[in-house]
Length: 317
Ligand SMILES: [Mg+2]
Image (cartoon, rainbow, N blue to C red):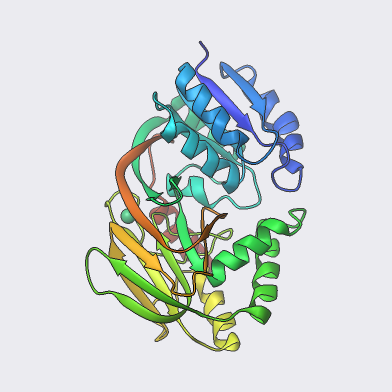
């Protein structure tokens, strides 16, 4: 039995992943890793493959693609009877999910190195009770779920950030806030018209927007961010602050925490998404699963919060 199974989504990143896999990954791993691989053929296939290969006994299941593929592989591994270790080549449109675990972003050599000499580390994941779906990064509803929906349907030939920003602008023109009720198991119920609600196991979505900047995948807690009704102009200004996680002090922003969080909208028309995948309309109950997934990460391991802090400091220079 080989150690690694690669779940390759050739259509990820507007079809670029097939080329990256063949030209940049395969030539480097052929002499270094004992692996098998398979191309995915459509939505849901990465999940099924990861589950099947996990049960067959591969030690590490590696997602090759973007966040959609990573989310499916996470679900496949966690829904298998024999749970494999998760890892990922972050080569898609959005690569927010693997960063939660401190898996190097886009650096193929560093990722290969981490597969060979890395360590196996446990992390929290989020779980959606109604949809029976795990997530590594952020669950969100309202404005940003509509953006994710639009961005999934948009052309992925553009870079993740540009594709996402375009979806943001189109959604801005059409969006109306939803009445939302958020019930965290710790703290106050939050109620009223909201532009968006984000529940973070990880800090970021949308290709680097740090919507839940204090989220930590090792504390059995979600960090939530919600945004009251504001004008389009204020929303644009605020979204520009989200990349660096500088939005929390804005008067329209509220935060909440909990490890069980129920969210509903009386209109029953509010979409929600996890890791960029639309799951349907509210209500949903989100639960943290502490130390639930094992990921192959670099050794020494640097938490993403430190990597991010470094990036912010370099920006200041
Ligand atoms: Mg946490």
